Structure formats: C-alpha cells, structure tokens
Image 1 (cartoon, rainbow, N blue to C red):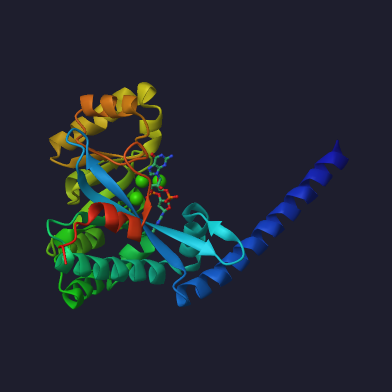
Image 2 (cartoon, rainbow, N blue to C red):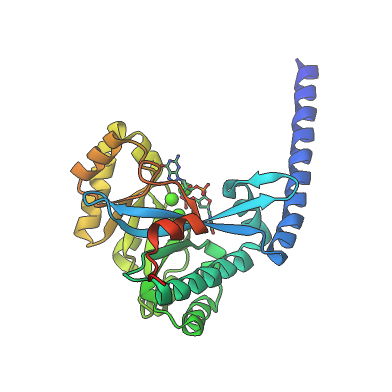
Length: 277
Ligand code: C2E
Ligand code: CA
Ligand code: CA
Ligand code: CA
C-alpha cells in the first residue's frame, strides 16, 4: 500500500542518515588515526605453487580502533578514498615498508622477500607520485626491486599517456607492477598490450569457485603466457583449489591454505632470517 511504501521509505531514509553519520565519524577518526599512527601493517606471504617456498608478501592495513575495535579495510579504505585521506595513508605505508626493507636488508642472512603494497587510483595519479617513490627509495637506500605495487583496473582505465609515463618512471627503479583483482573490472583488455605491467593477480572470486571458473582461469593464464606476464592466484584456501590452479599453469599462490596475513613481528620471526648475533 501507499502507507507501507511511505513507511519503508522513511526507514530507508533513516538508515541512510545513520550510515552518513557513521561515515562522517569514521572519516574524522581516520584523520586522528593518521596522526597517531594507529594503523598496523600485516604481511601475507605468497608462495611458489609447486615448491611451496615464500616468493614475496603483500602488506595489508589493519585499524584497531580504541573504541570501535577492529575496523576492516573494506570499510575504512573506501571512506579514506572518498575523503582523499588515502593518499596520506598510503604514502605513509610506503615509507614504513621501505624502512622495514632497509632494516631487513641489513639484518637478513639470505634474500628478503619482495613486498607488495596496494596503491589506490588517487595515490597513483598524484602528479609527484613517481618522484615521491624514487625519492623515498634513495632516502632509505634500497632498490625498487624489493617492491611491488598492486594497482587495480580502475587505474589503467585512466588517461593512457599519463599512466604510461608514470609506469615508465617507476619501472626504472626496478619495482614490479601487478594488476589486482584481475578479471573483475569492466575495462577492456587492450591496455595489457599497451601498458607495461608485470603480474596479473587472479581475483579470489574465481579461485573460490574454481570448479565453475576453470575456463576463465585457463583463459587468463593463457592470455598472461602470451603477453609474457606472470600470474598469482589469490585466496587459495584448499588443497583442491591448489591442485586445480597448478594444473592450469599458475605458479604462485596466496591464501589461507598457506598463511593468513600476519602481524609484522610474526612475519619477521617466520620469514626474515636474522644473522645470528
Ligand atoms: P586485496 O588487495 O584483494 O587483498 C586480499 C584480501 O583477501 C585481504 O583482505 C586478505 O586478508 C584476504 N585474503 C587473503 N587470503 C585469503 C583467503 O584465502 N581467503 C579469503 N576469504 N580471503 C583471503 P583484507 O586484508 O581484509 O583487505 C581487504 C581489501 O582492503 C584488500 O583487498 C585491499 O583492496 C584493501 N586494502 C588493504 N590494505 C590496503 C592499503 O594499504 N591500500 C589500499 N588501497 N587498499 C588496501
Ligand atoms: Ca591487493
Ligand atoms: Ca586482490
Ligand atoms: Ca579484493
């Protein structure tokens, strides 16, 4: 009835208003969280799908809020993106990771794993992003070869000339570029031929239902082979998924089957071999 319609509309409006308030509050608190360095870096290792040795690790942000408790990145990252705070947050992640790498580089006995960092569209498109990145590498006296930047298809859908220029400048440092959540964007595939990227991260939704998505994953793998790109499968949780992925030719995996994202200290204890004192 009309009356019911009106009611549900009011309820809807009320819910929207509450969401807006929460958003506003979180945005305000994000600002404080930046100032107080309230974000923790977690590291999720990546592994060779056959040899099962570590090949790298992805940094994932965790926000443990003093009152609200744990706020997942899927909640605060979009708010940070809309408010523009993401640029400051991600630049600080880049700095912190580089500082870690510099420490590990001094202390580690053997090769240290390459660390990948998620970079959002607005951070990547800042006019001085590549200059910032190069400058910080010099400051920490490390090679870009120790790093990887994970960007999404939203980035490569932007102005091709501009993206190409940024990628070119970044490549000179040795940093690798991967396309995150590959296969879920709505972009055309033609950019893969024009823009120099290194890795396709096959989205975890394909891996979760690998039995139904075999054809798609096989197509992504052969596309990558033809373009001489590397692939990694995300969100691998079971041995069955691992077997299937291996049979399709994908040689790198990340997921709960091998390891959850770990607090920095745990990651270091397990994967950074220290020179004995
Ligand atoms: P993502 O970049 O696709 O990261 C992978 C997400 O999948 C992570 O969730 C990770 O914990 C989770 N994951 C890993 N293995 C498995 C698995 O086997 N099964 C399942 N079900 N999940 C798995 P998380 O840490 O909650 O992060 C969610 C998203 O938040 C990330 O998705 C990324 O888009 C974003 N994010 C996190 N940190 C940052 C950051 O520093 N910058 C930006 N721009 N985004 C970030
Ligand atoms: Ca990622
Ligand atoms: Ca992903
Ligand atoms: Ca994702």
